Image (cartoon, rainbow, N blue to C red):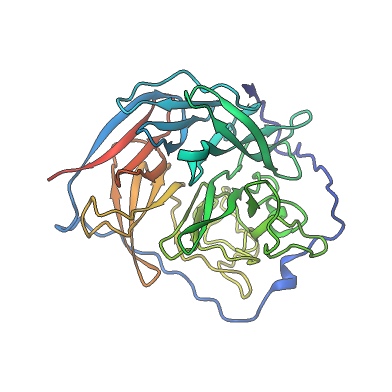
Length: 402
């Protein structure tokens, strides 16, 4: 069920005080080591080694689709931001909305956002989804829930809210909301990462550990904070926090190196790729490679500072990244295997990113006539799938050509 949300005036942000008495500031953890500055990578022309691919439409008529997941029988799960979860048949037929969702606040950037299936879905039929959860009055939060999909794929059962961002705020922007099942040595460890935006008007909270805004959190599949999270037992810090100083992350995935990879929106310029490490501070809003939308500097104008983690890569001008996936299959040949793929909402292309020794060495713009790319995933067939963000959004398969 989707509830309309009227955006408040930018100054009408209310703070709900939570039970934490001490805010840990970033200055308490600053080191003095010199900081390397990431260098933008030029976009090369297509090479002869690149495969020829066709954008094959699987389904259309999706209203602002946000995320796609894969069912073992060859069908798809797709979220629509206005508050619907759809099963899409292999032939592209849209099934009626899945019943049993909790209340979703649909407005601005909020709604029903990410969905992922559990690694043992074939046995337990469990999925996890992220959405904007209503609070009192105009307040809302980014929330993570689990549910069991019925055998007939028509309804959700045993829905449980695992996590809800604190405090709830009056904002329709910067929800973050990407969900990643953590893996250690290639195996699920029973925990989930969730990206949380700064909610736009609350940027300074990204540096405070007594709230969840502008953070990445790690929770167990039961919703509890794992005991080895970096801030467990620390006064004034919330135990779910994994890393902080993030702006608005709409893409995250486990990399082939076993680490969490994440990207986030900058303001005007300064979109980033990061590898969030436990307890580390990624700088927002103290540093940025971008500027504010009015052209003014962010913080003191610095792009890097000692003690704040620099990004692996940054984009200026901003590409407005969304969705993130590594290609593990060889379906597209050796030139693409191991590459990172990121959608661009602003410039409407799929970015194929080549990496060498953990660094970005080249970028290639694909699908430039497709539209705003919201999500990209590798399917169980080894092929890449993307979603386009529009009132008549599409699920598209990248089909390699001989």
